[in-house]
Image (cartoon, rainbow, N blue to C red; front, top):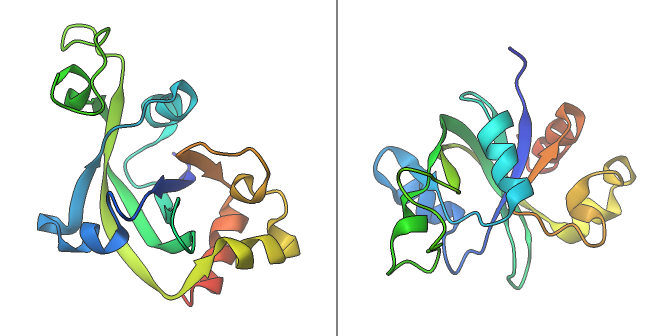
Length: 156
């Protein structure tokens, strides 16, 4: 089965790449996704072994901090049926889950943080979704070539 490549966004004030490194087993469930297109990427396309660029968004300097690996395929996101969660959805239930999550595990930290500005300045990344206007999805597919180039920019 072919490996897929992704870019996953997180606000570092909520959950950062450093937070992931500190988790037991350096693994965390990627919960709280509440966009159907992003959910469908996780539910139908993300596979164990896929790699993702971990992107810090909505912060002073957005950009890519490192790489994570998908270590558990899509399963129901229990935060969607927890009334105390900010991700609660009254139309979701354990019997009929609406939202899903995957587990991600720390793989590699970039030696050089790759800023959004640096991504935009690289002509070879002009088709990458994250550099295009209006691309706000928290999960985006990237090509193998884009993944490789961003990794090199990060010093790997």
